[in-house]
Length: 103
Image 1 (tube, rainbow, N blue to C red):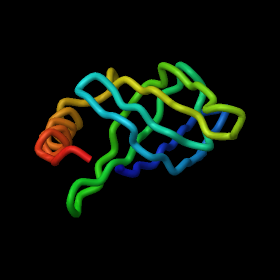
Image 2: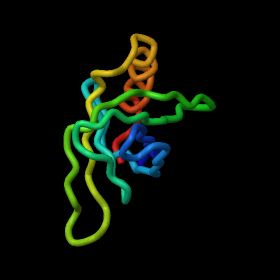
Image 3: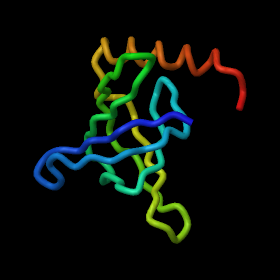
């Protein structure tokens, strides 16, 4: 399991930050679990580390679903707001994920 941070911004939640666990990641998006979900449609900054590098990726929230009766949520983001440099980093992350032995 990998970890990430999520930061929202703007009028509704300026500076709001959350710790997340990564559930799945692909070239089109990422699935996270967090106790501090953003709102659907919101643009967020996801920080993901690879080796000694931490990169920021822009994502748009496509879904938030409460997990059971608890306070944790499944959050889905797409990478539509990423720059070409961010996509290059994402490709490196995916190469590491693909090379890892199954859990």
